[in-house]
Length: 331
Ligand SMILES: C[S@@+](CC[C@H](N)C(=O)[O-])C[C@H]1O[C@@H](n2cnc3c(N)ncnc32)[C@H](O)[C@@H]1O
Image 1 (cartoon, protein in one colour):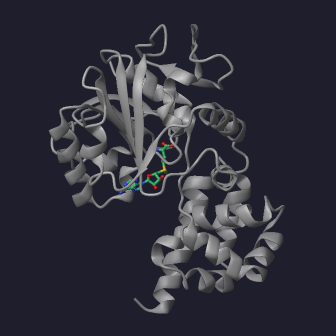
Image 2 (cartoon, helix red, strand yellow):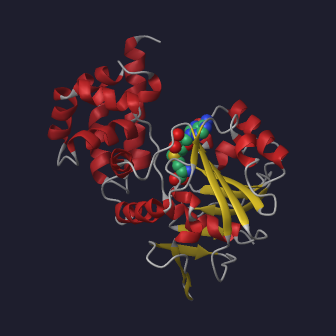
């Protein structure tokens, strides 16, 4: 690829990010990304980085990490150019590891269908905030009412719209063991890691930042263990540490897109070989090539593309909002 082609591809990524991802969620990031796409000086700087380090999310979070939330594109651009060495060092050192604890609201109904007590193993766990579904509180709403589930007093409350016959449990399931696996675990007791996590939340996303801070507080009281390693290579060894008397549940969200299709197939084979329960919550297109994936899915509701929650990668349970705001359970 010539330098010119690479720059065109990076510009296209930023344009797509602005229109497809940020529009309707973060007007400021929509503007910043769209303007980077038309800024040859910034595109040249990005193209000096390895391809996987040019992503819009990584640039936007890294600028925020260094300089805070900037009011307009002129200040953003000046920061990128004036602090380019510091900025590229952050972009090279950090990854996009957004940890969204509200995804527990869409995981909980599936967990509650399994025989307790549970042993939870999350792959691609980031800081492990989704490993604590029993420590949060939930408020499920629908046209006819509200259903509250209390985890631990003082935990954040995740509001989630229940669509369709969601099997809402009366209480959180008992969790007797939990562990995560991540290429680069983030540490909830480390101020720098927590600052990075907060920089990954986009401006304009309402309560997400507050929810994250509250979940970090809960996690700090008794941090979840997240093992450093690859989710295929580390799976069997970590799973073997779970107590045999508990139902072992392997789960993940927003992770398999980081793997090649071949590696995803290897992961599916490895997790099925464990004989554990497996609850993937990922974009349907990321799961579709796996053996046993359902031939037909219901049509998704209008709006941003949802995740698909499945049992074992074979039984489609629900479409879920990527940030846990709603769940559409299939009948
Ligand atoms: C977008 S974050 C999602 C975090 C969390 N699952 C959640 O839903 O909030 C994706 C995480 O997957 C991790 N990851 C990506 N590829 C991985 C691999 N091959 N093995 C282990 N972790 C991986 C990344 O380091 C990152 O922390």
